[in-house]
Each structure stands twice: as C-alpha cells, then as structure tokens.
Image (cartoon, rainbow, N blue to C red; front, side, top):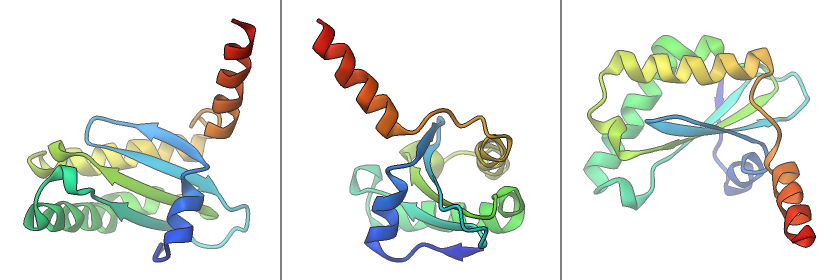
Length: 128
C-alpha cells in the first residue's frame, strides 16, 4: 500500500465518495487501474496544535499498518480526514472504524459519488 503525496491526488479523492464516521471521514476514489491501494491523511489545524495533529497522524498510520491495511481495495485512493475525538479514542476503536469503512468500499456500499449528489441538489433548487 502506498501513500498519497501530491496535493492533486488529495483533491482528486474529494471527487469520489465520502464515508462519514464519528472519528473521521474517508474520501474514496476508484482509480480503476487495479494497482495497490493508496492512502493519505489530513488533519486540519482546527483539530489541535502540531503535537496533537502529529499524534493523530501516528495513531492513524499505525492502525492502518496493524489492523486495517488489509481491508483496503486495490485500485482505490483513500483520504482519511481526522476529527479531534480521534486523539482520545481507544486504539482498537480506531482500527475497527477504519476497517468498517474500508470493508464498506469492498462491498460496494459506499453510496453515490458527490458529483451526482450535487447535481441532484441543483435540480431540486431549480424546481422550487
């Protein structure tokens, strides 16, 4: 499994599906190329100071390495956007939440893409 490193890769994942959760949300993009899954981590300044943000990133990387990485589907990019609650959550819960989101992608139950949802919303406003 590889890491996303370029801003353009992170922005591309925003066009994919979004899976919400209490500790983080995951943006998922199907690259349709069959290559190994890639992931990126985003922890905004709203979450905390640099020490707290780094601790959150370390916890997420370790949870992916130890528990959830095997649940990632080849050909997909995953961007995990952390929330502050992740800082104090039990490590097992972090791994379980990640696995649940990744398995949802594997089952194909991640819902529609955002572009389709925005378009549907635009159509709705025109009808009013």
